[in-house]
Length: 400
Ligand code: PMP
Image (cartoon, helix red, strand yellow):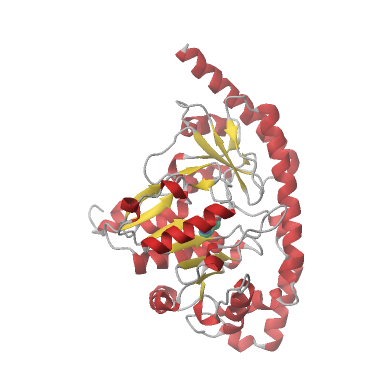
C-alpha cells in the first residue's frame, strides 16, 4: 500500500549496511568469508558459561529473572571499575553504565551529544557501525587524517576542533584497519583534546587482544575527566551475550542513564549475572591469552598468504593484535567491483569505502582473519590473490 507510513526524516535517511548485505551472501556454507567481524566460535567459553548459568539459577534465580537497575548489576559495575583502575587512575563504579553491547553505547552517545548538524570528529577510516549509529542524529562528520600508525594528531587544527561535540577514536587494533595508536600520539591526542575542550569517545573492544608485549595505556587512564570509554565482552567472552559498558565522567553519566532508560530500561539481568559469575577467579586473565594465541597464529597465516599471493603493488599492515588487516590496492581499482568477482568464486571481504565518513578510498578492503579456520585462510587467500593480481595487471595494461 502506497504511503501507508509517513517515515521520519531520520528513517528516510537510513540505508542498509553494506556489510550486512554482504554477510547475507556469505552465509552460504561454500563461501570463505573474510568479511564478517565475528569472533572465532572456537574461543567461546561454553563450559564456563554453563557453570556460571547453573550457579545463577542455584543462588539467585528470581533476581536474575527480575527487572534490574538501569545502570546495571552493581557487582559487575564494581568489577569493571576495578579492572580499569590502573596506572594511577581510580574509576568509580558510579561512572560505569552497563549497555546492551557496546553498540548501544554508540547510540546513547549519539542521543545525548549530537544535534542535527553537530560537528563530530571521526578517524579516516572509522568503524562503520559507529558511523551508522551517529548518522541517525544527523551530525556533520569531520574526518581526522590518519596514516599507518592511526590518527595523525598534528593534523588536527584549531579550526577543525572548534565546536566539535566529541572525537570518536579507536586507539587499539582499530576496526577496520587493525592499527594501534602509539604512546606518544596518545599523549599528544589527550592533551590536544583537553586544551580544545573536545571530549574523546574511546571505543576499545579489541584492547585486550594484543599478541605480544605490553598493552598501551588507554586514553581513559590518561584523562578520565575528558574521556568516555566504551568496553565490550563480545570479543573476550561471546558477542551473543550483548554485554558492553560505558565509563563516563559523572557529569555525563546521568544523562546516559536517562537515555538508556528510555531505550530498554536496562540490559538483561540474566546475562549480567552470568557474566559476573563467569568472570570470578581471574577467568579472563586465563582465557584471553588463549584467544590471543589463536588469533596471532591466524594473523600470521593470512600475512604469509598475502606475501605469497598478493602482487607487489598491494600494501597492507602487520597488526599487533585484534582481528583485521587493511589492504590498499593501486588507485583506480574499485574493491566493490572486485567483491562481486570474488563472490562468484566463493570468497568474500569487505570493501573499504563504507568505512569513510567523508571521501571514500575505493581501492581499500578489510580482511578478518579470525573466523575462518586455518586451511580455509590459505585456500581463500590464494583465490583472492589471483583475482587481485589479475585486476592490477588489467589496470596497468589499460593505463599503459
Ligand atoms: N565498536 C567496534 C569498533 C566494533 O568493532 C564493534 C563490533 N564489531 C562494536 C563496537 C560493537 O560491539 P558489541 O556491541 O558487540 O559490544
